[in-house]
Length: 317
Image 1: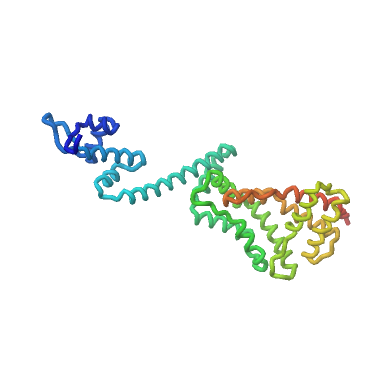
Image 2: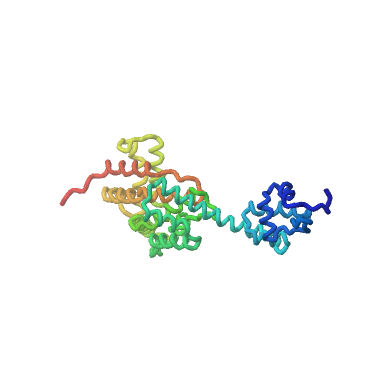
């Protein structure tokens, strides 16, 4: 067949794999115009109609609307520009679908109430600026006003800031929603604020503006070794490890290493060992794509137990 051959709608349908009804529909919309008519009045099409219909089918499968397709095939619009715009729109749709999928998965797994589901949905759809404001409000509530100890907290605040990527995985969205819910919990805010105030007080008592290793880090290092060695916290073998971190705490506070200091340290470690704090850090790692943090609960549990068996109870006056 040469370029002068004309095709009926039926022949055009067979060559393109479309139905006669579909070809007639595109013809009626002016996307594929007939070149001539048969003596009986039937529409006839040139060979270029095959190429146009192949392009139309491809663009329809990619989701473009008929109005845009007509402008493309008539060269009123550049196909690369249309493709770029459509790809951007699809990216937005994909992100929305990811968010919906993540929320529905979380609802199914957690058995959420309608109220909780509504909150999760709103948190998942926050813009980047809205997410920053939400976390900024949380960090301000926790660290605000501790200006004298600011150098010690600048890095901590950065390390506690979630950064949800532009195209997050469903588990990152789920983690973000749970983390956001946690940051809105007034009781959790109070708990983390208390820890920050305790650390700030220790920093100020050290007599320097240079950030110092806090007691939680010292306990992690010392008690971690004892735990790895499978040392019973009540055994004499635990004495050197306990003495090491209590001496560090005494130095931080500028106080003697006595029973009162150890009782105070028990309270401090129990505060740090809040399971919600550990959960926040786990969720933060998921959102930011970081390696999962090691649980420090066993270390703090060991340390508290070791301190309690070595610290006499207060006697009533």
